[in-house]
Image 1 (tube, rainbow, N blue to C red):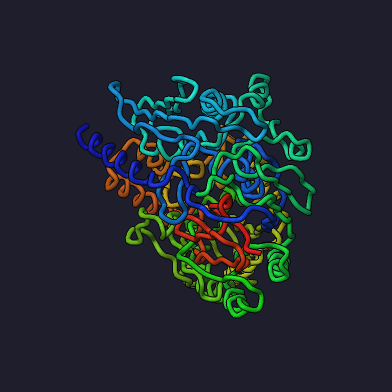
Image 2 (image 1 turned 90 degrees about the horizontal axis):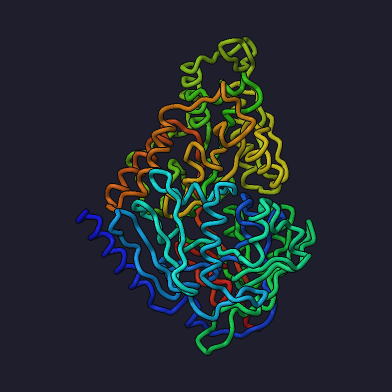
Length: 579
């Protein structure tokens, strides 16, 4: 217990030191007005954070629920936590009954975008009635659960003070509870009471003017396949160094552009203000900096991932057996020519990825991971060990003589993923596999991946972060994003009599449940070292490469602050344009 108490004192020191400013943006200087235009490959499927599972939706939701709309906010450059809706807090600290609490002191005068005041009632309602409501399943519950499956509860102390409590220590209580999006009780409550919260804030809500938030911009118009328009939240609470209201831009536009080639062209033509260059484009865009009046720069490895995964519960029982075969997956891992992907698709601006934890994370441990260097002979050896052979035509067959053929897909328009798929497809064909590559619309892809189970193999990525526990909604066996091997309790289409759950998956599940009760960082690192070892050994997700973070933006944008956690828009409320 002494160790726990000491660690919590250290936490308190760190968090108090982080609050050097009253909030991020308090020192901003800029000129109001104008429009900021971003590009996106797809439109949103929903604007309800609980039901959103794809970035095309969550990017829209961030605009009106994040960026200062949460209790605390993390700086993209110094990586520290700062006050936001909560102007101060007490804890996290252990309680006499062995639990943990955080007491939040809410900033007075904050209003939702419809002018209604924010009070403790909204925060208590959001945690108790939405995010921890057993009748409203969400990925947030996977993240918030403590070791023994407890979810936190909020208690109103007064109109501007909220206590949040866990019955046992939870290492990430401050970070996750502080980063929770806050729903307006005066609008959302009736949906919760009527049991139809899944229908709250559909995309139709944008054009109906129903979306309300605490963030800097509110979506007011959505034209499918064209754009989403946001306007400045007239009640956004932040002020700059001179007392002027933030954000600076009057409008933000998400322009929907069908593919990355068109996205780059739109950027070069001045139609969008920021762009994420592919490695093959970086040098060419860098040479055009003066001509196009742009800034092109790079940072360290991205937190995100790019991987191929197989559906262990795919409808075809023959293919299920292949995909559950560890030697089959190892063969695929040996068949991924990472250096070719890096040279061809990233122009050298990427590194091989072997671990589910980003190299930029303090928890990354290269010493424990298994590496699968490109080697088709080893791939063939793995296939033989897995019971596969080849017929007289060189076609790979399983032990029952079934030819190995399957569909590989990714989201159409993402040229990097399409390129990686082509490279992997070519290598697998050399192993005798009949692989058909079919890119499809992103939202359709996500629907198959998360809801219908009607897929065989997919190349896709996850956004990642510096804290591995943020992937609990991916790695717990009953989690909402455990898409390669959904539990029958999570996905109705999974046959309970055919459900395959190896011991190592249970061990990973245990790691994600237990580490959050441990407040000694060295022990937590040991837990996540074991996690990385298990994933790299058994390959539920087969990682490809990790690109360096690359950015391009208009040179007349001001207050762009690129850091370890933030790209070009993490502080969008204080960005402005020099005319």
